[in-house]
Structure formats: C-alpha cells, structure tokens
Amino acid sequence: MAETRLTSLSVTGFRNYAGCQLDITASNVLLLGPNGAGKTNLLEAISMLAPGRGLRRARSEHLPCATGGDRSWAVASSISIGDEAYRIGTGVPAESENGQRIMRRDGETVSQSDIGRLFSASWITPSMDGIFTDSPGTRRRFLDRQVIAFDAAHIGRTNRYEKMLRERNTLLAEGRGDAAWFAAIEASLAAAAVAVTAARQSLITDLNAEAGAGWHGFPGVRLTLEGEVEGWLDTMSALDAEDRFIAVAAARRQAGDMTLPGPHASDLTAVHTTTGTPAHLASTGQQKALLIGVILAHARMQARRLRRPPVLLLDDVVAHLDTDRRTALFEAVTIVGGQSWFSGTDREDFAGLSAQTISVSTDGTTARLSPAEGRT
Image 1: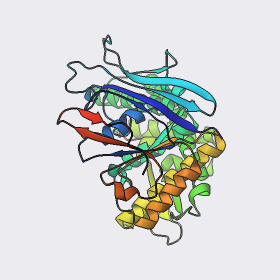
Image 2: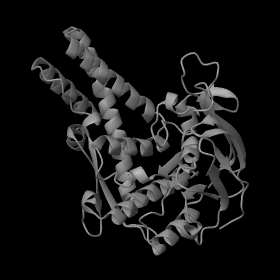
Image 3: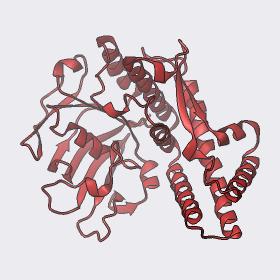
Image 4: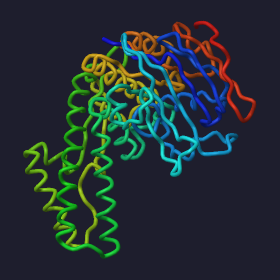
C-alpha cells in the first residue's frame, strides 16, 4: 500500500491566510489554537486540493483573503504517494478574467477528475455532526464525495445531470421548447439519472459490507438509498429503468407537473446495525460515532482497492467522543495508514496521539503558524 502524504503546504491569499508555508514531516498533524484562529481554514485549504468545492462548499469568490485586495488565491502542496512525488495546486490566478478556479498537477492545468485519480481527501467537521438529521441534499452530497474517491467521472455525471435538470425546468417555467426538444433532454436526463444512481448504490453495497460489523470500537452502520429510480433498479435492468424514467418524465410534463424522480430527490438513511436504531434517532455521541464508522470504512476501502488511503481532515473531531473513543480513533487512523490532520483547542484532548503539532494564532485579521512544536 502506498501512503499518501502532504510533505509541504503553501497557502496564499486564502481566507485569513495572507501567506504561509509548512513543511510536513509526520503521518499525523495536529493544529492547535483558539477558536477563530484559522485551523478550519487551513483544513479547508487542503480539502480544495481534492475534487469538489471543499469541506465548506464555498463559492470561489468567497475564498480570497480579505486583506489581499483582489480575488486571487492559491493552495499548493508537494505530495508523496509511496516512492512517487507530485506537485498539485488549485486556486484563482491573479490574471484570471472570470475568477474561475483551476487545478494544476506538476505545472500543467488539469481537470478535477485528473486530480481525483491521484489524490483524495475525506473529512469530518462539526457541521457534519448532525448529518443524519440534516437535509437530504446534505446527505446526497456526502455520498457523492465518497463515490468520487473511487470513480472520478462521477463528478462529471452529477454536474451534467444537474445542468440538464435546470435546463428542463427553465424551459417548462418559461413555456418554451417543443416535444422533440424535451424528448432529447429527458432521454439524456434518464441516462445520467440511472448512471448516477447506480454508482451511488454500488458504493453503498460495498460500504455496508465494510462498515456493517463495526470496527475498532466504532458501531456498525447500514446505509440505504431511497428513491424512485433506486426502486426501479432493484427490479429491472438499467436500460428498462431509463425507459421508465423517460415515460414518467413525459407523462408528468404533459400533465403540467415539473417534478421528476432522480438523484436530486433521493435520500440516504443510516441504521445502527447492532441496535437497529435509525441514525436520526440516535444520541449526538452515537451519531458522531456512526459517521466516523462510515468514514473509516471508506478509508479502508480506498487503502485496499486503490492502494492509497485518503488524507483525513478531522476538524474538532474529538468533540462528543469519550476518552476510550478518542483513543480508538487515534489507533484506527494509524491502522488505516495515510495522513491525518486533526484540529483542536486543548492539547490534553489528544493525549496518546503521536503527531507533528503546529500552533495557530491570529492578530485579528491574519492567521499565523508557529514552527512545529514537536509531538503530543
């Protein structure tokens, strides 16, 4: 197995970082500092190196440092994957006319899918503590991130589906388009809807096999994806499901109904496999443990199948975990392999974690990082 590690990190004009440069020497990194200092911003910067919109899903124009005076920002890293070394980066160049974010690998501009075949990151943030009680859209996005780690083309399929869905809704709302136009759009929507749903279902099947029994002190989880297209794929072939989608879309359109089945209407549910308790009814601590169980199972799958575990970004992850669970988590990430970044405010919360420790402070506008302070 090839361990993926950031060996350096450069952040310029991002959030409250006017600029910083880090040399990383360990498999575990601990960011320590008061609330508001910029720990999460640094983890978000790392998450931007992977496909997608990062751990906050922020728009690119919201990312530049307020003191920078323009909309440019950049994040770059040297990474090692086993014996191989690469340079990856992302950001908005100062000369950009449209403010569009780009991705780069070894000096070449590449697609997000190209980066996804090389580097992936998974994260847990405080906002995800309630993911099982949050909106269905939040859970769908969570699931899609997990799919992309194994299937980089999934991000393109979901984007195409959402674009075609918006186009159909706009045409219907404005009373434009003829039958042939709608038929072409709905046929394309059907193919994308079935492909996206099938990819999600395939990953859930594999995750359930990996996470169902629990692991290293974290509970077993059983995931289910609920929706009309999911039901069709349980009973018919993909081609028949596409035909069914097309027929339903045409019938609803002719009846004046804009709604459609599809990936945009699905919901992800979770159940504690030992107790049978639905995750949304579990305690806050149990929900956190179930979420960690899913993330660890996903990381183990990447380590085994792709031969490279993801970089784990664990923002204030020890909240709602008792001492035993904290110890179990520290041991678990070591077993999974790869590199893990933790953040917190109290060093004592990380007793037993061997990590390169970096202090994060702020002067009120710009974050500052001290040199590594050794290991916890």
